[in-house]
Length: 392
Image (tube, rainbow, N blue to C red; front, side):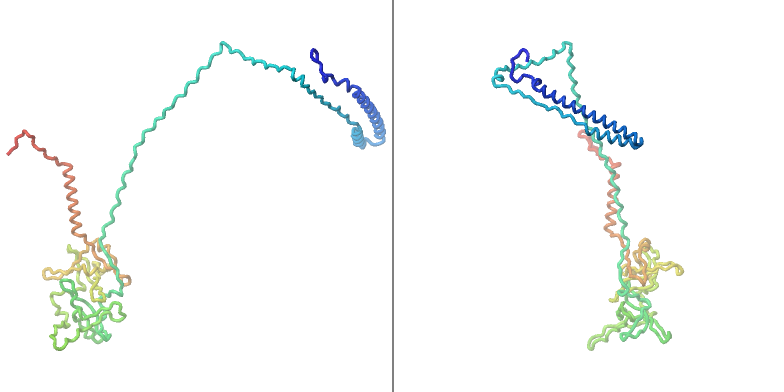
């Protein structure tokens, strides 16, 4: 380097490699000259050949010769790259002084620079809660109407438990049929006393109606033969006084304190007509259980029968006349099920409200009316002042 300390390795290697490079250039030039001569000779031969061949066939052949001639050209070998590295000695490294880094140049701040204004503080957004909406209470649902009060009650029995009295066959204990039941008599407490039997004659000749004591008969509703059996009382034992035994008697001699039941009219408490008795249903203990009433008002109209409970029957005497009464009203009779011999027997009874419940309902109504009157128009009396004179 100029103006510095000379080193052994600083000499340029260009002068050392110059003769080798000149030799290589000459050899390459000679090879190129030879190649050009060969190519020229080849071209002359191709031209001569083309003259002999047609023009159309000479173009591909010429291209083939040209490509083969290009392959004959030698490729130039690249010059070798020689790397030269310089390693300094320890003495040189120790004598070299470290260079001090240049101080960083700071650009002066312009005097006219205006400081930016501080950004305004963000305003705090105050969110006020919405006042709660008043709770809307739905109107109270109207109470469900109470179920309609029960006006009738029914109990169901089968035809093998009860049997109709009217036109039922009457037999002796030996099974011989002696007649048919046609009516019955009751006393003032609605207890059966007599059974009217139509005793059969010969071929309908000599039939007669006779009243027998009710206790002389046994009832078998589920019997396949005659449902009523005449069982006369046993003879009194010897040595004992015989009790008076009621004897059969003609219908005309029926006692006046008994009432004939079949075809009798049954009325309500207010005197309105209910219907007429067309049959009586009796169980195996010889106890009547129901009255079959015909509610139709005329013989020509549709007949509707109802089985009314026997215990609801009242026997009354007015002006020496026997009356049958029951506690049914029109609504109860309309709601009563129809009696049919082909269906189970539905015995109906009227439901009469208890007097205690009616009295409590009336008292509650009266108390509510008095309370409303006191709240609307009553004014409490004021006590007289201490200095006022009381009137005598």
